[in-house]
Amino acid sequence: QVQLVESGGGLVQAGGSLRLSCAASGRTNSNYAMGWFRQAPGKEREFVATTWRGGRKYYADFVKGRFTIDRDNAKNTVYLQMNSLKPEDTAVYYCAAGPLGATYYASMYDYWGQGTQVTVSS
Image 1 (cartoon, helix red, strand yellow):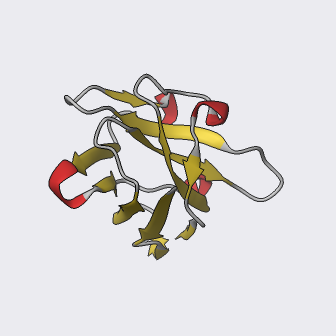
Image 2 (cartoon, one colour):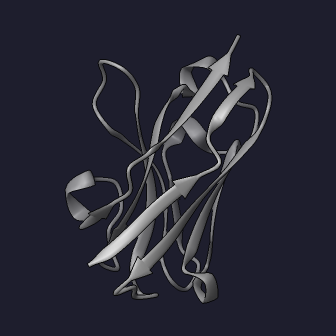
Image 3 (cartoon, helix red, strand yellow):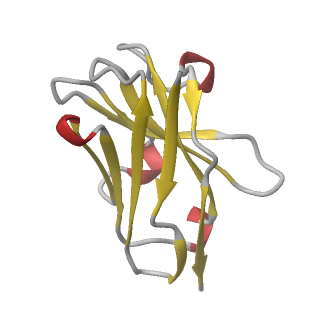
């Protein structure tokens, strides 16, 4: 089992920045794909970004140029730097871990964190 714990959410004004962190523990494997998804009220969970060991990264079109995903394999931690935040970025952000090759679909990921709330005010 792998446990994922997110942190760093909060309330920020439009145009501001937040940095989310996700610490993995348990039977961690640095070969896991580590990703972020989000879910706004009344909407389905959607892909935000993911990163593979070796540095390959994938982003949803709506965050390209604003969000950056990074991972520290030594710390079993993945980060999501969010800049130029918009009110429509308001959601619960979830960290996920899955086998190497996991990308855009939630079903590709085996482990999930509890989520952290991000609220962007206008």
